[in-house]
Every structure is written in structure tokens, then in C-alpha cells.
Length: 489
Ligand SMILES: [Zn+2]
Image 1: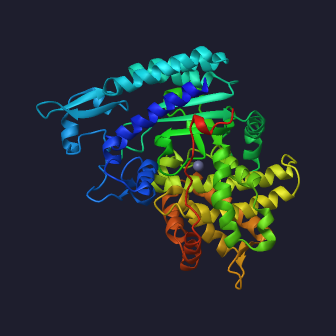
Image 2: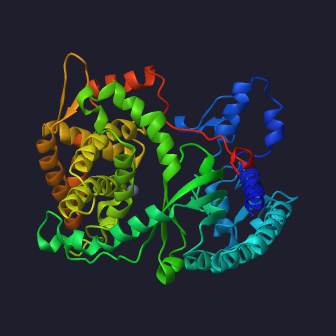
Image 3: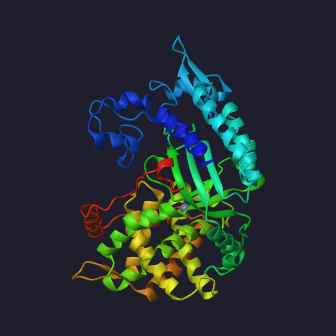
């Protein structure tokens, strides 16, 4: 079954090339340099994704905001004037007809050949699938690829619980459409579930209501009861294809995106364990060797990195979603600051959860706690490199400066390395958790802006350390060698 899934995933990869750039072969034939070819593969086109989409091939201009989803010369006014309901669908593209007029074409027509091939592969895989839930999902997904109606297959995906192999496939995220944020991009993940870790995750999720009660704020700021029905799992990824393989590689996903499915079935949060491991080995560890004092090196561990990331996801469920003073949801009240504040909340409460769970004897020895603190510290340098345009980057800058002001770490003058002060970091963590929870509960937009203005930037000393990381050749992200040939049978 797996080789069939790999083949279908390859179809998604080819389709994403068409959406992001157009004719891949024509582009490839323009270059001889094997490194440039490789870079085109990594970026799915001639624009560098981790560098503001700047062009790295001579003679190629700016990336069209609407990628290949719309005619490049289409104006917003022209789009608005177009009378066709389907123009707003996330599964249609806009083209010009013979007379130059705009027309709407559904994905299953625009990409008919490729989608038919992918659907056939899914049907063949369904015959071989041993898990009934997975079989049902593959059959429904195959149908969806052919009529662009994904709802039933999303429900089927949420209904399967015991399958050890998973396949996320289809048009899913809308980031590539920077013009209107409407059109979805093709992608595929082939996943193998880690049953042991998934059980642990489910257990931690079940503790959420209890953890919510222990948050360090007045009762009114933790009055909402977090749902513990969320479906959490740890997986190893054996293939990233298309959209999810372009630019920075995600280490956690939360799907499906359809709010109608959320209402009926919730969503599934997936932690991608082997990708985390690769980022830990290739990025976090080398950064630590450069910037964490020798006596705390041993506290930088993969388990702690995994826990930091995993509890970040779980911590999104803590706190409150609605403001206390009637200014609507936290997201509405905090406007454009809401994502940086929310990511900052999840980071700091993730660490707070580890602290609480250790006290509740859920995580084992005290060593775990120290590992989490030091690994968290090292992780700040990794995430700050995402830059101020990323919510995650900004949240990490705020926390770095906050910790610095509170003496949560010191810098050894001679070696230029950082040392965590456990007690002070713990106090800073509790205070920052409280500040963010109260800020969200009050829906205090002015205070959020102030926090970002005063703390959400990189001071010269930190910049010098980031330069040191860059000079050492430590990558900002990873790329994969993947495909059937990489599997050990
Ligand atoms: Zn998050």
C-alpha cells in the first residue's frame, strides 16, 4: 500500500509545482548548475521562500501574489466585478477565455488528468488497507479529488482512530495565495503513528481541565472549561510533498481546516516527531554548543524539545477564548497583535504545564524540569531566527527580552555563553504567564501593542549572537531526502 501512497503523493507534488510556478521542466531546462537546480526544487520555483520570496534566477521578476491561481494581470476590481459564485471557492482557479474575459474553472477540471491518476492510486490503496476506517477515508478522498467536495472525506478522516498509517492528501492550506488567501494548495504527508507517544499525549490532554484550574491567575481569567476531546497524536513522517515541503518545514499540524468539520468532529493535532528530531540534531544542538554554558549542555535534550513543542500545542487550549468585558473574542479584541500574543501564550504555558506536571508526578524526575528550562532557552535562539514578520519569531523576541529583564539568564562575559538561572526563570515564567492571560482576558489591545513595541525586537547584543549562529553555518531549516527508495523494508 505504501508505494501507492508515495505515487499519489508525487502527483500532489507535481500539482503544487503547477500552482506555485507553472511548467517545472521548462524552468529546470534553463539552468545547468546542479546547486541552483536543487535550490529550485527546494523552493518549488525561482523565488527564495525563506528570504521574502526574492528571485534567485536572472531575468525572473517578482513572484505574482496570486501565484498561478489567477491571471497575473488581473486586478482586484476585475475579480470583484466577475459574476460567478464559484470564483471564491477554495477549489477553483481563475483563467482568461479566448476573448480575454475571466472564467472560473474547478480544480477537478483544471487538473483533471493528474487528479484522476491520484484518485485511482487511492482506490487501489484502499483495497489493500487493513484498517476499515482508513479504507473508508481513502475511498471518500478519491471521490473528493474528482469532484472537489472534501467534507465527507474530512469527516471520514476524523472518524478513523486505530490506523497506524495515515495519509494527508489534497488541496489544503491557503498560504500560497497571497493575493486573496482563498485558493488551496496541493500537498501530501505520509505518516506512521507512534502509538506509545500518542497514548501519552491523550493522557496529557485529558488533564487539561485540571491544569486550567492551576493557572497562576484570578479565577475569572480561567473560568472557561477547556475541551479535552481533542485528538492528539505523535507521528513519524515518511514523505512531505507539495505545499508542506516548500519553505520552512512544519513540525506540528492541526487539520482539517473546515469549521463545519470542527463543529461535528473537532480537529486532529499531529506532532511530527522525526522532523523535530532532525531540527533538534541539525539546528538546536549546534546552537546550544555555541551559546549555552558548558555545564548546562547536558540539559539540552531531545525529549525536552519534544515536550516543549508538544505542550505548546496542548497549551493553545488553556486560558480563555472570550474577553471578560464583552469586547468579543480575544482574537477580535487584539486584532493584528492576536497571533503573536497567542503564540507567546502557548510557548510560556507549555513550559508552565511541564512545571505543573512535574509537581503532579506525571513526568518523572526533577531532571526533566531543568532540561525543559535550558532547552526552552536554547529554543529561543532557533525561533527568533524566523524573524519579526513571523508570529512565532516575534513571540520569542518578547520572551527573550522579558527573561533578560528578570534575570532569568546571565551571560558569561568570557565565553559569551548563556546560563539559565533556574529560580529566576521560574518566577519570570509565572509572571509572564499571568501577564499574557490577563491581557487576553481584558482584550487589552493597547497593552498588547505596547508589549510588542517594547519587547518584540532584537537588541544589538542578541543580533551579534544570531550572526555567530549564521557564521557557523547552522541552517535555519531542514530539507528531506525522501521517497520509496529511502524506506527500509
Ligand atoms: Zn502555536
